[in-house]
Length: 113
Length: 115
Image 1 (cartoon, each protein chain N blue to C red):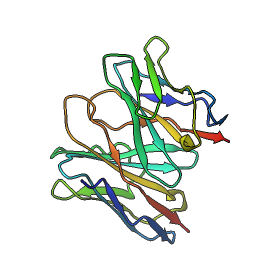
Image 2: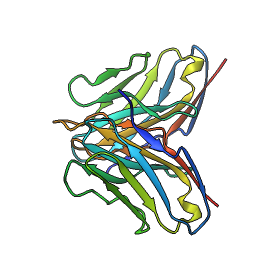
Image 3: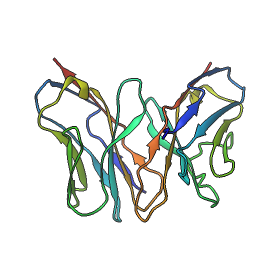
């Protein structure tokens, strides 16, 4: 069975500092990987995804994640965070097309002014 | 167009009562998913509908939970004889069908509180 581990439940960081949210998955087959973001009092929104091709994927608001097959990781990074990035971030995996996602337990990112 | 909508947004019920939660997927999306988000458990898959195929019910936690999807569109998740541990946010998502994993679009959720 697939599983996703987000090692940090909470990450406080000062504004304009870099951040990395860690995600590791376990799967014996090819995977599709996702990061979703949940802003306070809002629903889940897709931030970025890896399906195939380039292992580095980017979002429109400056986040990026790199698929590392040997380390079974898909860590999320941003070089300089803003107050508006305060949210909960969920890593998710699926092993085949159009199947339910398996989510990590989430990382709460708090950006401090 | 409109996104995924869910109703009610909040539901408070007494232990032992039945509840129905509704999901309206994005028009044209043939795949529909129900998840549950609770403290300490994160996001858990409940049930999945794909086109006209039989639903994947492997995530339902007990036989008190059931769901149906009428006409390939609207879905209703029913919880019978609710228990306090059923308190959670119930999320619905929909996606198109394609060759690879299509993006799942989530609704705002229904926050269920069982007293």
